[in-house]
Structures are given as C-alpha cells and as structure tokens.
View 1: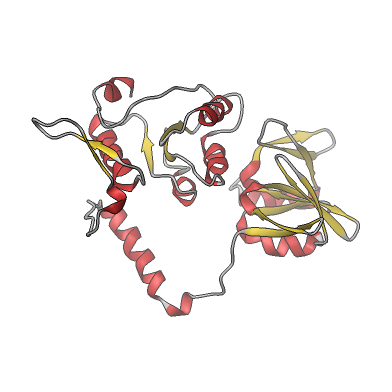
View 2: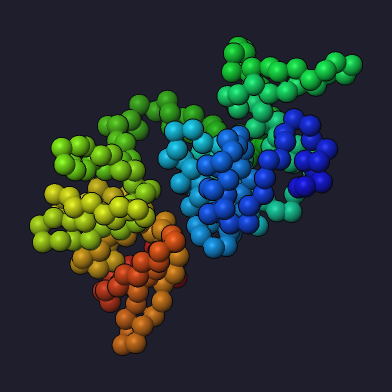
Amino acid sequence: MRDFFAGEKRIKILGEAVSSNEALELLESISYDVFFLGIELPNGVNGIELTQILAQRKIRPQIVLIALDQQNAYKAFELGATDYLIWPFEASRLENTVEKLLRYADVPHIVEKAGYEPQYVDRSREEGTVHLPMADADEDSFLIALRQAWDVSLKKQLEIEKLPINQEGRLLLVPYNQIVFVEAYEDYSFVHTFKEKYLTSYRLKSLEERLNKHGFFRVHRKYLVNLEMVTEIASMPGSNFMLRTAGRTKIELPISRRRINDLKQILGL
C-alpha cells in the first residue's frame, strides 16, 4: 500500500498508526479525509469497533476496511464504510477504491491534466448523473434492495436506532451501537456505554423487547448485552459461563445456565 500511494498523486498519506487508540489521537491533531483500517487491530478496539466510534462524529473521515475475508463486509457497509477490501488485493482494486473515495468526498480534490498544473475541483458542486460499474453480485443485491424500497407492503413506522434517556432535565439520545450492556436495578435499569452509566426508568424486560432485534441478548436475569460488543465467552468452574466485552476496560458478565444454549444457537455453535 505504501508503494501504491507513493505513486498516487491524488491522495497524500499524512500518517500511520499501529492501533485504534493511536489512530484516534492522530485524528484529534490532523483532519484526515480517509482512514484505511485493518479489521484486527492490537491494543484497543478493532477496525469494526473503531468504525462504530467514528460513525458518531459530526465530521468523520471516509473509512476503507481491509480484511482477510468477507465476514464483516455487511457490518462495515451498514456502518457507512466507503469500501471493503479483501487482502491480498491487486493494485487495480485499490485504484477503484481511490476513484470511489474521490467521487464521494465532500471536499475539493486535485485533478491533474496532461500539460497543466494541478487544479482544485469542488465535486460537491457538480451536477449530473454518475455511472458506476457494478459487478453481477452487486447488481443482484441492488435490485433486491430497490424492490424492497418500492414495496409499499414492507413500509413500517419510522424507528431511529437511539434510546431516549432523561438526565437532569435533558433528553439524551444514545445510539444503540454505543450501548455495551443494560443492568436491571429494581424497577429501573442502568444503561452502560464505554464512557457513561445512565440510570433510566426503563424496565429490563421492555428494553429487551425493544433492543432484541438490534443484536442485544438477555444473558442473565439482570443483564442485557449488545452482542456486537462481545469479544470472548469463557467457561468457568461448576459448568458456569461468562462473557467479556470490547473496549479499553474489559467488562465481565455472567451467563445463566438456561440461556447459554440459546446464545450458542445464535452464535452457530
């Protein structure tokens, strides 16, 4: 990739990071337009989790994820990634990614023409129709999505994926993908994110019904967990199980015996 970008004049490399924490520190210092992220990152959150974090920023860089397989491709595009590359890839595939990045960028870009100095072109002001090449597999997915979009029978009430939480006279909207787990507390519940803990008036049962279709699972009578945040399931003495979540501070939660089989089924075990 270094060799490719050394000869690519339309994109300038401003820095490299070996971990997600280092990448976030760089982003605070320099306004990057594009992040190329590996899925497996050491010492912190992985590429998908970092994409989730960046998705919450008002101004965020475009994301290109690099992985060894297609396992996380759907999740990546769901989070707004611009492209998803399977390693190893040819230089021509990376060239297509660069073209896509420049097409969808909202900032001026340098366009070089033979015999002329580089010119700044604000693509956001251009009008017209953009024709994109589409592989057969992409075309099938696009047509299915198009049919669903036009099928009136599939229309349903609008639901934003955020949880309203009243805090000292303020109404906070916490995105579902920022919630790590929910803890029952008498007739109330604590909603835990990586940074905050909110006491809410929701009962755990009502939150289970609301969040179940968004990847949350009731692992214990006291705990509802975002499975996207789970990184490990460990067996404990006495045929007990526990899970650990992602993030700088690892959170360990018990799994009840009667729920472990349902969890294994969800995970395909």
